[in-house]
Image 1: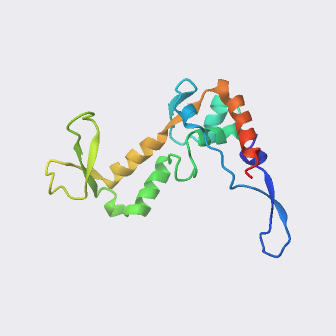
Image 2: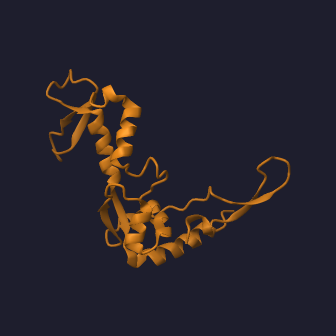
Image 3: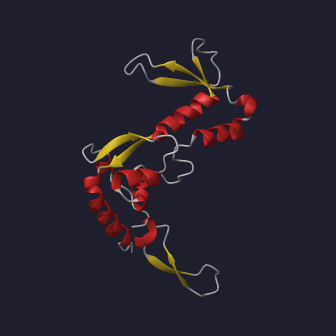
Length: 178
């Protein structure tokens, strides 16, 4: 099943001339209930490998590339070009475009370790270490790499629940809002 195949069709006047055309209502949204996303018995955690796409993961896990939307929806990925991890080549180009070649290794911010509780937690103290001379510098590269590493950590719905998930999605997406 493709993602938009069950979206409702609505009449829409795209030109403002009174001529209505039937269009897929792409503004309709369904979200995965928090209770399901937090229930560790229905998903596994997974680290996206270099160059892996949602289609590849869906094929490997569910046997159907068309279920890539399940991977994206379950992980709240709204924009697969910005919310999905980049390949190394894409990442390098992104860094050069965002920071310029000469500033990729410039200081992005400084961090200190949290002193109580989870001492492995880092606290961003800003772009100057004047108040915290022992703070560790984090480069633009390291900062962006950490963001990519977070995007690599995804949840995959257990294949045993995919049919039920798809059926519930179909039901919810087709419900009347009015």
